[in-house]
Image (cartoon, rainbow, N blue to C red; front, side, top):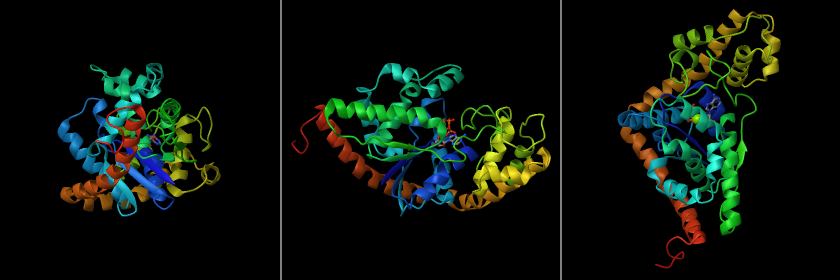
Length: 331
Ligand code: ATP
Ligand code: MG
């Protein structure tokens, strides 16, 4: 079983990323051949600062290692170090419909939020993401609920490629967590917590100090009711129940039973404390890892070598199937 997933090094990673993706990544190291990537090329699809991008890739690498990724038990690398991703992106464009890309909600949301340039990179983002996964012939992609549409698209791309050029690519399956697949913004609980589209107060960062976490949870937006229970009119409280369940590895119904009549104030305090307990060990390990950029660079380079070996094989098959370059092995 081969598993692939990626994470953007945009800014600081948040609780949604941690629960929706990173936590599964760590667990999946024991389930199969796990391949994880810091997708720095994706981060260039919106305005960014070059120095900050490089630093954020180290921040993200240290965060993931602090969370428990073990470079001996998984392949862990930086996307831009493996050129096969961008080449495959271009080749896959030939079996991707413009109209499909135009329907992607992430594109609509993110392009709507740009003040000046809406880059072509933002439009092509899902094709590069398809290339990331398909280059490894991965069978499973553990990601949050927001990526549902992109995974469907990459499945269509793989199927269309195979139908057009012969069986070459593996059609991957989406895997989303049962609890915590969509953590919402604490200030605007109708929107997902996001790296690029949220305000500070609505976003719990993995590296936030305990007092900041507690304050953000205390000021989380809730409805005017008083019962700690999930419901369609209760986006804020439902989100807090989901967060509590995810960080404590419990069922949301059990959280409701425990806190049903506790009142919103006491419940928010309890969620804050649970999140602090959950994130503190990660923040402490991060501190120890982040200082040594040379070592982080070495870890990423070793990962890239292993990744390249797999991706280069797929690319050779894809090029042959598409009639691009010489026949495999003949030069
Ligand atoms: P952006 O909003 O700029 O796209 P992001 O916060 O979604 O950034 P990514 O690096 O794109 O960060 O996502 C990394 C992983 O985290 C993906 O698997 C994504 O599905 C998951 N994820 C992102 N936001 C949430 C969320 N609010 N709840 C659960 N999972 C999430
Ligand atoms: Mg995202």
